[in-house]
Structures are given as structure tokens and as C-alpha cells.
Image 1: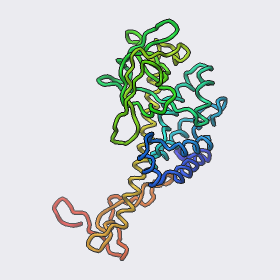
Image 2: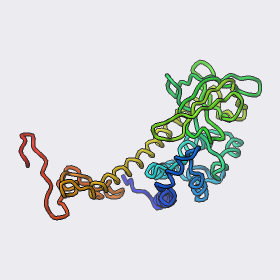
Image 3: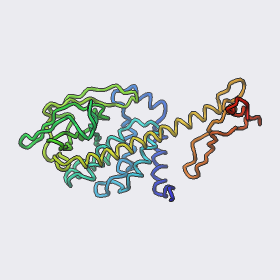
Image 4: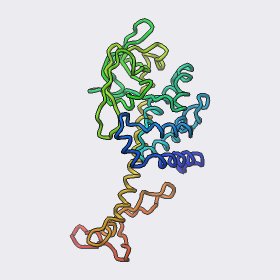
Length: 311
């Protein structure tokens, strides 16, 4: 089976890498972290101009009409650079379920602004003491609106989002998905401190209204849609993690080739991978479990055997 990227996928990856490398510098990251929003608006606008925000959205809403793999490649590059932009919340947690399960009106209203970079979306999937598929937050019908009551935590980018997708119980073993305006009456938001320094919020909902036209799918049959979303969210977070880990390996390898101890670079002491495996060949200088020659030609110490002697 051929797992190589095709030309179009390589072009998406390379374009994302070019833009992110050009904008996400150490100085820029420090500037964003010192601000109040934690989001690089200039980078967000540049990603929109390159149509990367619409990479996996249909062409009839202004997107590129590509797939989830292309979106994965974009997220991987965002993870590699720890880009301070709400790509995953907007594109995966918000836009994808609207594109797949929304009404024509919902698609028309929300997706073109996402592609243009004018609208941030997110989802409130986490509650204390329960699984995402069994929310404690409840929704009750009140005339022309639904009213939500409950508490959601760890909501990414909620402070800049125009809509938050909220799963809520609508009956026994019934779940609905609601596109909540986070500035509506009955919504109280508090910032949460995270170890990742990503902006997240705690949302307290007390009769928060959601119009009927902002219900995503069947208000009592949203379970399969929620499962669909959680699967893609899991893979999307893995994409970010892949990018973070690849860059961590690269930085560590560079460090081992320059850091000296006892007048020798530490890469000559042990079997140290000099770089992540090549995407195409699986080699790329990875030498885990092997001895390496130092710059002067000497070998580092061989690994000890179980009997304590050197091999």
C-alpha cells in the first residue's frame, strides 16, 4: 500500500509550512503571549488569504473541497510551529460538523465567514465527571428557542468565537447539538489557565437561548453526529501532537550535535537519532540503537551487554 502524499497534498503541506515558518517566530510568539487574546490575527488573515481555512470545506461555500487528510497536514504544521491560531477549534470542532450535518441555511450563514477568516468557531465538549457523549448540560424547549443549563470547561478559543457547538441532553439517552452565541444572555465565561498556554474558557449556562434554526440536526438524535465529531477531533489533536513531537525531535537532535561535554559533542557518546525519519524513505538519519562516529572519526562507547562487558 502506498502511503506517499500526492502532489496536491504535498503542495498543501508546503504552503502551510511556508506561511507558518514565515510568521511564527520566537519574537512573535512572545508578543502574542504578552497580549490578552493569545491569537495571532495577522497569521489568521494570511491563512485565510491562502484559502487554507477552507481546505476541507466544500467549494460551494468558498472552500477548496479537499479532505480530512489535507486538513491533517495543515494541523501538523501548526503543531510543529505551535502556531497561536484557533485552527482545530474552528475547522474541526465547528466548521466540519456544520458542513457535514448542517442545514443549507446554516452552511450559508457560517461557513463562508470561516473561509474568509471572519468567524471563529469552537465546541464545548468537556464537562466535569462525565464523558463527552453523555453531557450533564441539559436543553429544554421554550417556545421558539431552546434553553441550555449546565457548565462546560476547557472550551478552546471561546473568548473569540462567534458560535460554540454545545452538546446537551434533551431527554433520556437523547442528545442535541446547539450552536450557541457565547455573548447571549445566560452565558457567563471565565478564562482558564492551561499548561499549554492555549486560551480556554469555562462556560456557565443558565437558561442560555439557542434559536431553533441553530440546532444542528435532530435535537433528540444528535448522538451519532457527536460520535462523528469526537472521532475527527481525536485525530485532529493527534495531528497537532505529531507536529509538536517532530519539531521536538529535530531540536533535540540539533542540540546533541552542538552541546559538548568532556570536549566532545554528546552525539558521539551514545546512539542518538540525528533527525526524524524521512517522510518518504523511513531513513532520514535515524540511528537509534547504533554507534556513531564522532567528527574526529572516533567511535563513542559501545553499549554494555547484560554481563556488564562492552560489546
